[in-house]
Structure formats: structure tokens, C-alpha cells
Length: 125
Image (tube, rainbow, N blue to C red; front, side, top):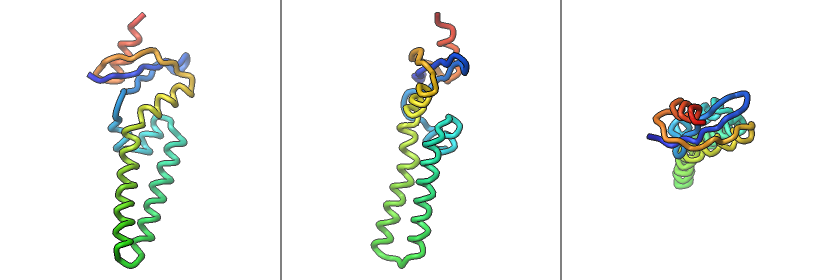
């Protein structure tokens, strides 16, 4: 069982957000952000991926040496961070975005899927 926070909007209905690490956010990054309507964060993430790839291209053209190895190490750390941070923070970002869009938190439930969590919350008085 997973823990979900369930939100309700008067027009858009229910949304369930899993508490904890988000594997879809970690693996799909900006695509997941777009699907969850996190427009600004998605743009920032794409820009950071672009910046890292630009740095990588510049470093590839330079002379091999210790500085190049250090930059590659930093690039690996940057790419790992771009994958790990959305997994760690993605669900919290999503909850803040839902609140900003007018969703009200109804409560927290234990369920197997987001749909089951919403169904469970909808059936409560």
C-alpha cells in the first residue's frame, strides 16, 4: 500500500498525489513535469539539460587533461542531480501546484493506485 494525499477542485475534480519518491518524475523529468502542468519547472529543467550538454560539447573540443576529467565528473554529478531531484521533490512540487490552482486537500489515504485513493476518498462522507 502507498500513501496518497487527495485534493479536490470544484470544477476539475479529484487528484491524488503519492507521498514520497516519484519514480516517474525521476525517470521522465521534464516530460513528467509537462504532464503534471509544472510548466515553469519543465522549462528550467530543459534549460539545465541544454546547458550541461553545451558544456559537454565545449569540453569535448578541448585538450584532454586533468581539468577535462574534473569537468566530466561535474557533468555526471549534474546529470544525476537533474534526475534525482525531481524524484525527491516532484510530488511536493505537484502538491504546491495543485494548491496554487485552487485544489483543496481532502485528506490522506492508503491505497494501491491514485485511482483507488480518489475512489476511496470520494466514497467517504
